[in-house]
Image 1 (spheres, helix red, strand yellow):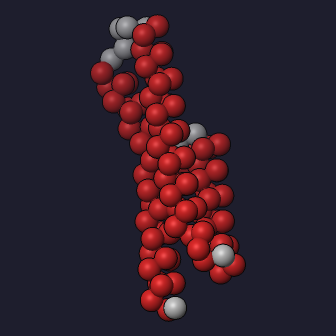
Image 2 (cartoon, rainbow, N blue to C red; image 1 turned 60 degrees about the vertical axis):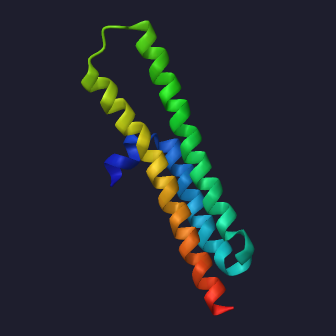
Length: 103
């Protein structure tokens, strides 16, 4: 798990972890914001993946003789933040459903 955290850019994964922590804190204080924080985490993950792919494409343009395995590995690493963001969004939806069933 730590390897995925470091592979997915520690800054980005740290921000997503802050979204996850704030999701649990907001669930008790302001339940209406649970879904929005999850959505924000997912959009942030997708945005950071697009940024990573853009940077990788810039590097590929500068060095055109890069192996396909390296390109696929870079794309795989860029998916880590998206997966984490989607998991946080999924958790927010579960919390939201539980909150609505209790109310």
